[in-house]
Length: 276
Image (cartoon, rainbow, N blue to C red; front, side, top):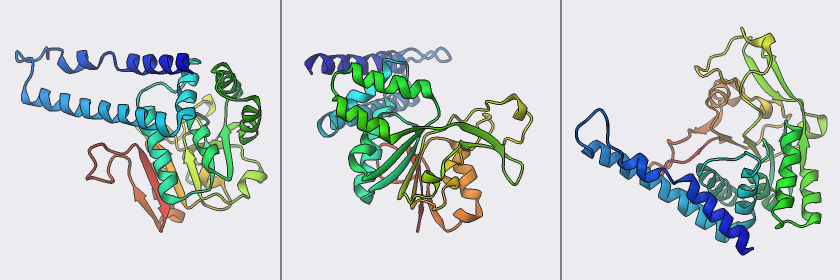
């Protein structure tokens, strides 16, 4: 346990080793090394990093297995970035505040461990067989999860094909090829972190794409027969834009990423769409 904890701390520190340099390196376009604007920039960077460290420490005490999973999965090249702790902190807080008990997750990761713990009915949908295999192997290699737990975890992860298609308006979107056993279930929450937002098929390279970065909407939640009460969206600007323009979503309330809870020192990470 001590060895794994030490590795986790070293990994986190390595994520932020350039913080001081990025804050205090001289501005080449100005003779003044530190101006008021520079100091303000330093303050906001330190504030953000301080909150990420707070989230890590908080999760170490409340959800240690999630932190262990987060660092274990980094070994295979996934889940990089210290913002991941902010993301996991918000997911846990959202589940607790809204007393959510059933959920579907699009895109497996460390959050899968978190959802599995608190949900009585939960599925994680993944598009990559390779990632799903590496996922379980990474957790096995951490030596912190029992074989029975990993066997149970496997049953919650479904690897399904990613598909691209033109919607009724001719816009290119992507989704998972969901089976009836998923589409006909009722979930209180849909967590949207997949599938991949970038065009995969050359057949659609000339299709209508509104996002300036060529990201396409993930419409998996709209494929469900019963719209979840909450949609929690991890970034994915194109997906958020697409959802809020849908007529079926007009009665829903929207909380944009970074814009709600304005009294907070740190802007929230997720966008929330929920039924009133």
